[in-house]
Amino acid sequence: MKTRTLAAAALALGLSACAAEFNAVNIFAICSPPDPDTATGTCLYPATCETVFAGTPVLDVTTALVDFRMPVQINNELLDNSLPADGRINTNDATIQSFEMTYSGVSIQPWTVGAAITVPTTGSSGAVLRLIQVADFPALVPPAGATTNLVVNVRAHGILTSQNSFTTAWFKIPVAVCAGCLASGFACTSPAVLVTCPAAAAPGVAPGQTATPACATLQ
Image 1: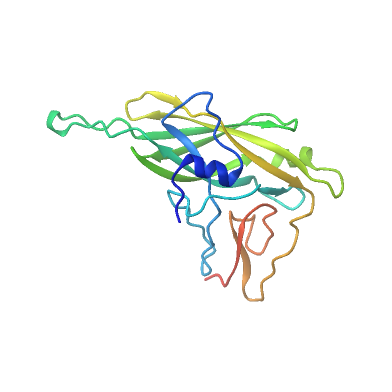
Image 2: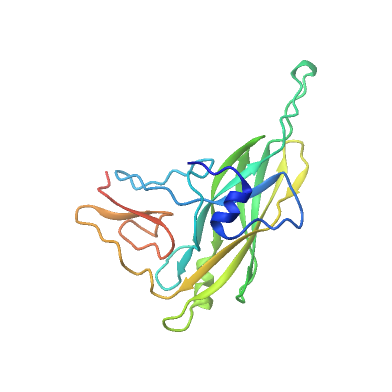
């Protein structure tokens, strides 16, 4: 079942986009990671969440070897303003050019990641956001056996077809950080190997973060 209202997304996640400023282009929800393809190990991220992620994503900073990532749904609520009779084209398609991250609850520096994501008028696009860079993991290691809670504040910057720029409202993503809690727990029988969405550093390697696992006999 697809979730289509911001209220439902906020209820499922226990969080919502900060409404300090409104923009018709918005990060709408965190999506549950899809199932990996069991033949190729690839991940297909749809334009809209099949299901909204419920709970708090987890990052294991001593197991993960790549940036912490989560899939999201991005909406464009602007209407098609084309007028074919007058030869006017639609100028409300959006292109996201970067994502900006700041962090609450920990002392790591803000981070900006380039992007090239088109969000069509009155439509949606899926994206896998790199939310915490692997270089910051050592600074996030909690005391033995403990869990640290932080919030990733993320917003998008981009441009419409009209060439007007936009910045979305901040969207808040809580993350529970541990050390070693996701090192094991899902095994495959050879010749199948572990694959996940989002992908780990390599097939057979634990992702060290919230992800959907599967066993794949790669072709």
